[in-house]
Image (cartoon, rainbow, N blue to C red; front, top):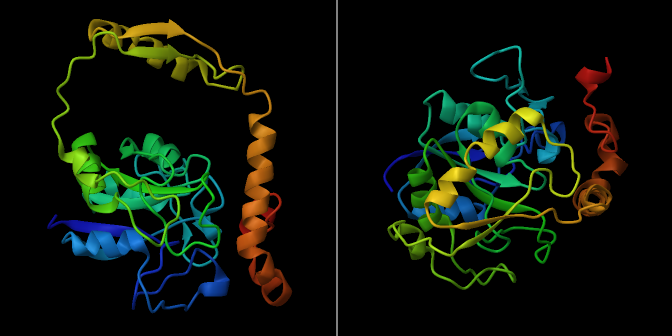
Length: 273
């Protein structure tokens, strides 16, 4: 994989400043690479820099007090999404063919959609995470971003696969992502949901997705309407997110409260003023 890559600024990079989008780490230079960085280097990817992120990757807007705001590359008055917004913008602007990212509540998918590139959230453990303060935690994952599905699959061949440092790592080899996609889909069952059991979905998004249902039917898939019950999903997610933020960042409050944004609301100093 001899190509350029960018690393999200929440992933430690040996000898390269890693700020986590926070003034607390404004001048921090790690002594080790994150596992995902380590694997991309081993595959031949050449790191050209770090990609911007909200503080500690917490937010759907890519803004922090260290590097400022990353706007949408197609319309500078709009957001690029987050928290892997810098990666999505770099891809959309043609600066990079591939970039890594992370996803807790949409951080690989949201900016990719906003910037018209591809972001893929793998299953927990498919791309093992290290270092991590919560190695068994399955809501936050790391994954690939690129301009095409083919490049995402290529990147997965480098970053997926087991590692003893991750207790939830999937043992399956990453080589499966290099296999041809041609297959017979006749009889494959697909549950088709329009709003995931009542969650808010933009009607324009629903209309686009509905227009593609026929594609799966023409492939031979059995497409069946189904609405799962996700009544408590939002509350559950917010509870787990608060626990994870408390575990990872609450100890900074004692000595660095003046350098942190308001964690409970995600409102930055810029937005407060």
